[in-house]
Image 1 (cartoon, rainbow over the protein chains, first blue to last red):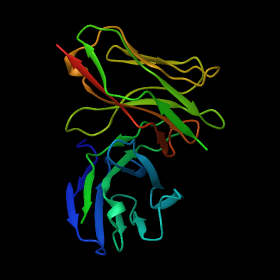
Image 2 (image 1 turned 135 degrees about the vertical axis):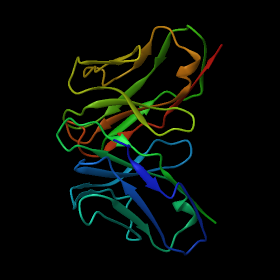
Image 3 (image 1 turned 180 degrees about the horizontal axis):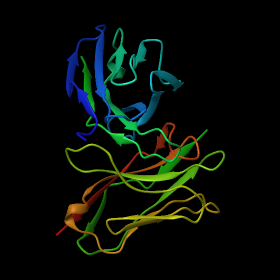
Length: 114
Length: 114
């Protein structure tokens, strides 16, 4: 068990560019979650998957954001036409998938939009 | 909607002092409650949880009791150590078990001085 991994750990981009982040959950974890954390705030829930199905999306997930988990393993989060307000830490978490499971968090991807 | 309010930081204490970090919540239904900790340079880790009223979660000397009547989940430790210095987040689940997205408080930065 190597834990939840995220790639890249840091991303600097210019406003208007597209970026994509990857999350690899703990092996055999069915549920995968994305959160966003800005400086001085707690993580904010964005979306989650049960296997390959996206079951819930927060209103924070604007049309410029899209997440996929095509084979029920790793997931990608894409942000199109980035804005300075998208600068944040993007966190991924996974859990085995039963009702009372703990969510295990990855180290995050820090996005800076110039 | 769901929300979590926790005391503002930073909280600065001397080693071996008693710690209380207040957390109150607003939620529909019967959420599960969590404390997560983020040590410097590391990802979020679950510290403890409670899934129903009057449950007490405990770990590493920390305790918190789920108080439905006061909608609170205060974190306590009898004698803190320098190694407890971290940011602590109170959170609740959207559903009863924690398998869905979590709602976090803003975090409380704890500094323990030798």
